[in-house]
Image (tube, rainbow, N blue to C red; front, top):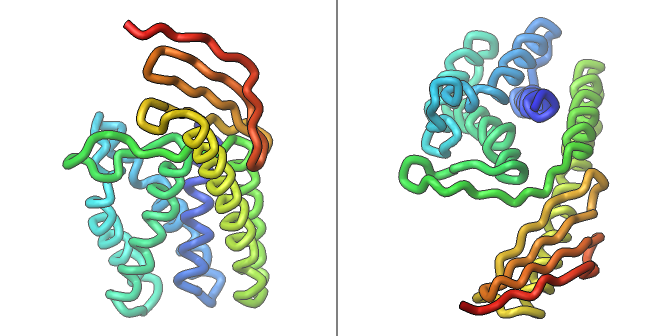
Length: 226
């Protein structure tokens, strides 16, 4: 939980400083602090038993609040700042939860959680490390092309994780009836490694392991139609 929360904060800080591009050290520090707060703000309402801030409908509200605060530090266009900050809110929290442990993006209209479950804890730690490096590079006044490299690296890793999961699920659906199959893929702590749990309509349970684009079935429990 601590690692997951820290990841939200670091992603928010890194992306906000990249998007807003503050020049002075004092402004860099304040924008970093705002970014850290942006990353965890959607979790605030959870302490009151509500998940509204996890909805995409709350993003403009959070974006507006932090745009007002940001413009106290940087004299930028309100609209451009609002759009950039709203994107940071989405990427630093909503997108991460979508790729990780799940989120009700369309609450309260649709309360079912959406999740891809492609971020194991080892990847969370790697993201934290890479984005800390990214912040250091920006503070050291490296070029934007250098400072953005950690974001590029994380994007590539996440893309490969998503493709790996999608390819394996597509293969499983082609082997079994896609109308009667439920697939749960849980990422191992090693990137591109998965545990597979397949449930068929007749009660059959299929378990196995997968790596990159290939899977191995370890055992099958036969089901019985009732």
